[in-house]
Image (cartoon, rainbow, N blue to C red; front, side, top):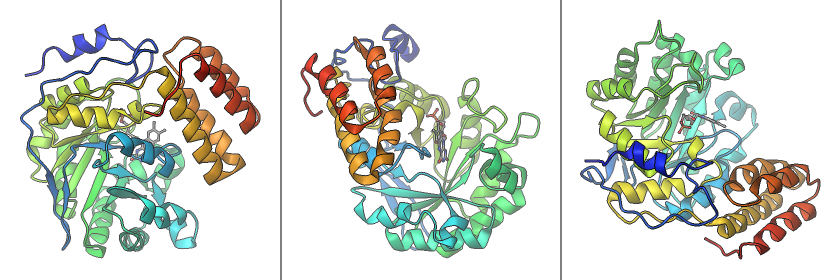
Length: 367
Ligand SMILES: Cc1cc2nc3c(=O)[nH]c(=O)nc-3n(C[C@H](O)[C@H](O)[C@H](O)COP(=O)(O)O)c2cc1C
């Protein structure tokens, strides 16, 4: 089905996920998709959802804000994107409501990802998110951050399946839209029972599962275990989305072929590469894969993201932008020097100036 995708990605080895080795755009490619199965239906508790795009942008705390999501939608207008994870207790106390209240501004399907260890707080947060226009509610059961897991939220729920199921049941009972769970293979190798845990989530009311093919103990080390994801897929009747180490259209096709999953979710590969979701979507539909923006286009994108962040976040926007600029400005002549300068630029003007000077060398245009 797929002609040696690993060989293909090796031969185009790029310094950054999803980016070409030089400033030149990749040629238009057409990859062989698996048989295109059409839209994915997610059953709700009164309100079902259809997903025409089978590649999802993962929630990325500190990264996938509304400005980043707008860029992803430029290449993938139908894709399901997620908010950064939202703490249900904080929401109850009145903090972080902006992440939910701004859903009205979203230009496409948006899942709200919640985390907490308190079923009632999760149910209340889900009601609030639904009222604000969430496409679905996702429950975080994979976040490895110690402070969160120690309290029993995020990946902490992998160690307390009984509480995990109570949370799913409470949230599923609180809203009409579908409730999904994003989780990992288990807490650690010796205790992991991904099939058993997934079946319990399904029985508790989860309407789809996203599975990152690593344990909590692994963090982001080693390789995501796609074979383990395949075993879970075979056991479930609800849709399963495979996640972990997909950084190109070729890898997405290979992951889907190996796991038999209903869709694929991409995370780190999109950092500095908001075009990745759209490129994978095209590959999955058997359409020509849009080229990776060239260096000039990437610099224009970086400048646009900078301005949007400054407008939305004021001075803090510059700090947030630095992170994104560091990822976007890679893989072209002079990129290392530019990143060095950008990390040290203390004002928006100095940052703009560096980007403009670099863009002069390439000729920039909006992708
Ligand atoms: C910076 C960063 C932030 C993340 N934030 C979240 C989050 O808020 N919620 C979540 O479920 N997973 C989060 N993750 C995990 C990713 O969504 C994803 O599951 C993981 O990176 C594996 O996929 P990938 O190999 O495509 O990156 C985060 C990962 C990174 C690197």
